[in-house]
Length: 145
Ligand SMILES: [Zn+2]
Image (tube, rainbow, N blue to C red; front, top):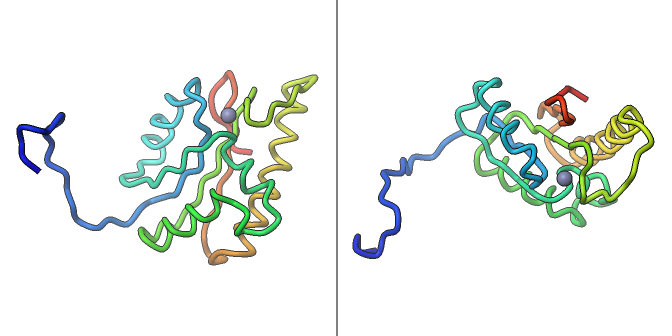
């Protein structure tokens, strides 16, 4: 590639890396600042991010792993970059779910059930030693779920 066609010039480190985590996160930009805060808090150096509408909804809805785009991505990324952690994050008021909740507690409980389904799919079809963490983002920030 000739330099005259480059929009951005940058020195990219092309060395292989081991990822600290695969993070499955919703595209909703209202919560994007939490993602960088979370990565800093966890002191992750390399993160493989799968950012899709609904976050772990795709895993929770799939009965079989081959039905889940997110599962395919997570599996492939772990094969490539050997992350020991999978982190699932859902958030309040998620348009991909399109559900209305009477209370914030009801919504948070609903997402706990979604995480259980997602965990089952991952545990049944990936290395059992992988650490899976789940978090719920809401108006106040991020909480373990
Ligand atoms: Zn969302």
